[in-house]
Length: 118
Image (tube, rainbow, N blue to C red; front, side):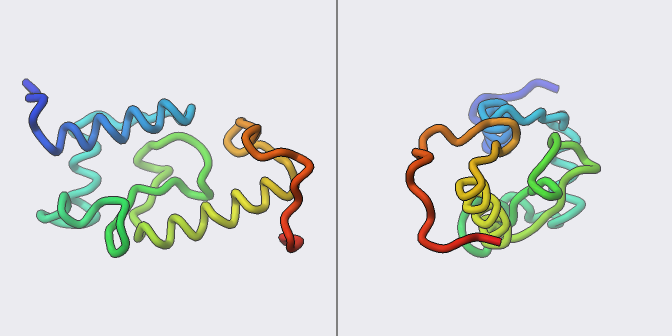
């Protein structure tokens, strides 16, 4: 399959792949698998329904762990994914534990949150 660099769908796939790699998360979808996954979950108009804004859907990993594979992802609203990740980040900052194997070095250990997180 010849891919055109101006194709918005291919760019969305490439962007997702590149961001996962930058975060050190394995991304095991081919372009065709990725498109089929979105079509199966959101239907024919899937490209307009996915994104990082309120009311749009994202491909989220279960428990925000492991690789991006068809068996380890779910389709949820962006706001739901952000609330899941936000709790995890706050907890990690409080306990000073790594997230996906990467310690959050940009947050000084001397700064403790105002509240104690569960």
